Amino acid sequence: MQLLQHFKEFSLHPKNAAELRGLILQLAIQGKLTANWRVEHPYVEPSSVMLGKIHDDKTQLIKEKKIKKEKPLTSITKKEIPFELPNTWTWCHLNDLGIIGSSSRVHKKDWQTEGVPFYRAREIVKLSRFGIVDNNLFISEELFNKFKESGSVPDTNDIMITGVGTIGIPYIVKKADRFYFKDASVLIFKNIFNLYSDYLNLFFNCQYWVNEIHKNSMGTTVHTLTISRAKLVPTILPPLEEQKEIVKVVETLFKEVEQLEVLTKQRIQLKSDFVTSALRQLTTADTEKEWASLQSYFFTFFTEKTNVKKLREGILQLAVQGKLTKSWRKQRSLSGFEVEDASVLLARIKAEKEQLVKAKKIKKEKPLPKVRDDEVSCNLPEGWVWCRLQDLVNVGTGSTPATSNSSYYGGEVPWYTSSATNNLFAKESEKRITEKALRETNCKVFPEGTLIIAMYGQGKTRGQISELVIPGATNQAVAAMIFYKTSKDFKEYLKCFFRKIYNEIRLLAEGGAQPNLNVGKIKNTILPLPPIEEQKAIAEKVNTLMGLCDALEQEVHKSQEHSEQLMQSCLREVFNEEANKVEL
Image (tube, rainbow, N blue to C red):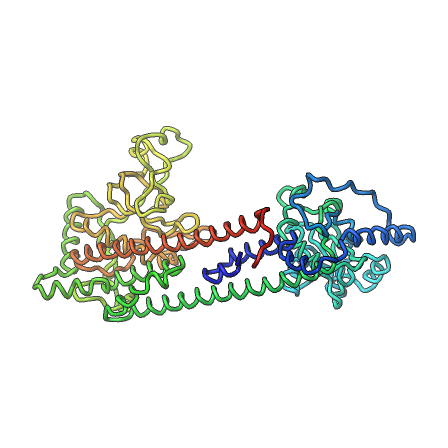
């Protein structure tokens, strides 16, 4: 099976690249990467011979009192063996291959700001991943030399293994390394029999090792790997020559995976750059040629969710600039159809509001200042005007009935909170209140079609807009936009506008742990207002294009699913026990 060839044909995303590396390591420790090598080298000394020599050497060191005699470990049972190994390989306990221990205790009073580096688990993790580490703990030269005499200082090719936090992370001690380490936080595999440390490092990075050490690792929130547990891990020992071949093959395959991953990242970046450039041109150009050009590339370049998101944002930007409806205006002009200027609409709304105030159906509001030239972001098409949200709708909010009063809750009146704004149409209210709550508190029912916007909430909730499909009350975290008769047809356009300014309006929020908007800021929102007929055309165009974005996202999802299925198919195939070899 040409495993890597599959990924040359498809994008190798970071998640798949990590899975592929894990697969390569798993194949390596099962001997499947070197099946052909074993055919070409039939007379290699079995690793059982090496294991016997290590046992004899250990016995001799115990006799010479250079190491302590340990309690014999029980033999590895068939139940403990998860898969079969090649004939020349051996299962053994990790402790059969060396000495596993920790350091002597270093008390806090012995910590210093200079001297010999003193590493905890976090420093070992950084060394393992990056090869370097910033360290702020040290011990004295005198104390280090004392530990060196006792034999607990790390030597070249020893392997450090993290014992707390992210457990089991290995680091091979280099010749130039000179450090000590914290007891219990870090274990040490003393490589006193000069085993091939690169193979051991490979083994300590495979998923099998991770699974084994977590089976019985101690601790609740923070796992720990104890010396006694590490000693017992069933370990895979190939012949020495094959260990070297395994490492060589894995390094070669990892380089290929890295190249594929880099190529994928480059492709993604090129597409992202194209999308960013094209959308920038769309939002600044005066012609529709760029839009037609971009449409022809939709299914080629919008293959990442981030790019589809940019497209959605670009569509909304074009909508509120009047660029989606440039042809619409041209056709209306050619047909002689007169479009009523938006300023006439504003005047009618103002007259209706004054009448409602006179009839005492709404309260008189403090007039807001006219929109200044320095407050607007672009020039508008003819017939459009800049205005504030308060000029179009009545903005209000609700409240929370006292939770201590049980008679206020459990009724029939929907009561919406900011979480209801997670969809374009408000989802069903989480709670309901009673008619009594409406009479005795500041809660009031907003009619169907009211737009609500979250003024604060968890995550990305703040700034989201939604439409009530069922009349209901709201809490104080939600601002409600109630339409006048003259402005009732503005709803779809306002949805487009608030979706477009979602990020900008979030920046208006104030506060520490939970920033929030307020009704005053919502009322003061500046927006470009098209004629009512053009608003309808904009909403129709936006809905059509958002449908295209939905289709693009579905294609992205299908592509990701395909990659995942490919990975799973590869996994199933390479672990098929009937397979004689695996070709990568």
